[in-house]
Length: 83
Image: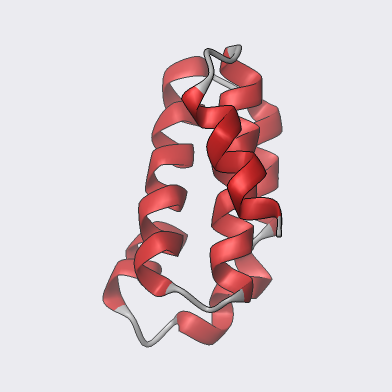
């Protein structure tokens, strides 16, 4: 249920932190589905955003997802994202 709201937030001009948080939350939603393609896509976008902005908040949100990623470790893209 959260995905449409988060996607709508991305369409609007958001501050750096809000955009990064929305991307990290979309990564979490994708992990719960499970939707590996979206998980990797949103996760990589959130990670890139955190690197560009230096946002520790977004980085922590992504680090907190690591236990969720464990069940997808067989996928090389998820392993790369986790690394």
